[in-house]
Amino acid sequence: MTRVLVIEDDPAVRRGVSLGLRHRGHETLLVATGEDGLAELVASAPDIVLLDLMLPGMSGLETCRRIRAFSQVPIVILSARDDDVDVVVGLEAGADDYVIKPASSEVIEARMRAVLRRTTQSASDGRTRSTHGDLLVDRVALRVLKHGAEVALAPTELKLLLFLSAAPEQTFSRQQLLEQVWEHSFHGDYRLVDACVMRLRSKIEDDPRSPRYIQTVRGFGYRFGPL
Image (spheres, one colour):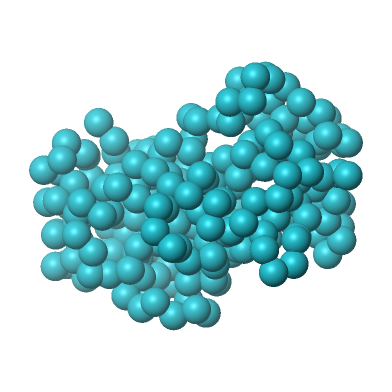
């Protein structure tokens, strides 16, 4: 049973999401504010968080940032608007995925499951550990070390790194990365990829503005170095 923390201030949405997930065998923890969400996260240790952006008091974005300051729990944003600024800022704050409201419980569960799979899946390239410059990637323990110190990565960041580093120097389009990492089979939203790359670079690169590991192939996608 998956324990889902739902941080949503609209009672009708909160109730609808909870009923749909409970019907599918999940346990739900329901709160209406970011402050209560942080407290519930510490008290109950949920498996995943569904987070509304438009919250009273502490905003959803600030709640996401505060969660990421101490936890790598998977976060899926629930957003009422498909606005570039809202979506990108939310992803850059540390969310693993986003769902535009209104959304059916089937869609929400599918996106939740895809994110949760990233916490346990690793790229199957036949190696358990690989070293790339100052970076050590352990595919069994699902750990990444830089200069010998562990790097805390959110599930999507980890899976993106595992996927790219399994095929150094090979270039992947944004669409390929959406399909392999986010498991989006449709012609998807490349903001997910770009925002995750930005977060990953900030954690593993010495200078994110001149990346050594996650390199941009202009007009196409990304590849893994160093070359």
